[in-house]
Image 1: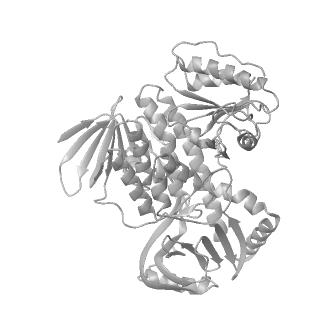
Image 2 (image 1 turned 135 degrees about the vertical axis):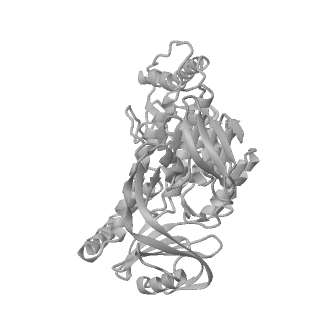
Image 3 (image 1 turned 60 degrees about the vertical axis):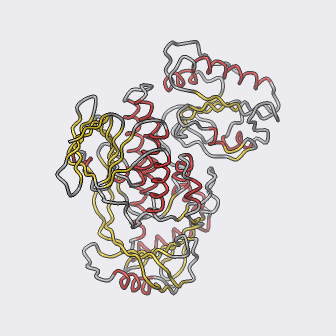
Length: 532
């Protein structure tokens, strides 16, 4: 029996667990990652990364490697009754430098994350299974067993995080409910070469009375073809089943060629009753499972890990109390609930038949014709418009709880101003015609710096002047001011995960209060508003 102590113990080396491990290790937090599988899983279920997840992975240093192994997806096309009904355009997603989602098999995403984890000095222990855990107050005691052996390892960690999938042992051991139900369908898939005229850079969804067929291009020229089937249907030959479904449901000729990689999976919608119990947290599929419609599951798990990483690191350093982890659990459960509900509605829409299918088709055509489909759906699919519940003021269309948009301006990209650990105070003086506003902004920054000197939480103030060369970086073209709706002198306080904590005018007294909440001082210097 061996004993290891301290740090964070992550159960599960899938994309969620690996994202969290990289987040923690890059901040100097000791992390141990174990996985019950003997080796990395060779097959892929998840296939699409959306811009919000791509932003996270890029900040972790994995962006370039992912770009080389993926391909852009420029649209999603719906067909019904043998004809095309609507197309959602993913070519010009606003608010991110990643203007479209990408197709990349899950095993490739995992490989990139494993490589990044290894670069940081991390090591994954495969073939290690969690048998039991006990929260002992100031630590978690986990019993780990090597598969094929009776040897137990009692590991003691400050925190245990379950990223061990829909059948989570962690969730079971802490007694958290997993509310929801399975759908009446399962999906059978093939990955391989195809002869078809369907655009390789689009997702194609064929909705018919006998079921759904989805076709999506893979990097390298192959296609994934997915066909729905009754949950209890026995399928001896997946390739033959998918080929027959394609012939029946797809009006465009599609022929599977050569050797195909196959799989099948049951679809569920479930949400854990809690994401945190004491010193144990769950995220990814351990905390929420949704229909694969819209390709949201893996992306939501990556966001779970991103939102947790910086908070857990600050708790480990003694900067914040455990309460910030309760905040994380509430935020992510709210977001997961949105995703589960959205994908459930889409799944039920796909499965409609008869008169209801006719109404759906008419609604899709009307939404396409009026432009409503492309004004609303791309950002929703990409989770760019999803926000956490929050109170407080806003500027333009920005409110607390929203993600800070990424905007290209002459100083670079707006989200490159974010710090891995510090708060970003983005000051927009709107000073093109009034130089006095820049002086006011600089006084505000001086007071914030004075406060930050007395707090363990770092604050990075950045002033973006509208006047050329007045600050570095500057916003002389007004691109950042315009995108953020800063017509008057404004302040945006942003958390390390890119979520807006405050957005208001210079003279709003809530600036001082919110900064004190997020960056409590060892002493309390005067931090007052300065009307412009």
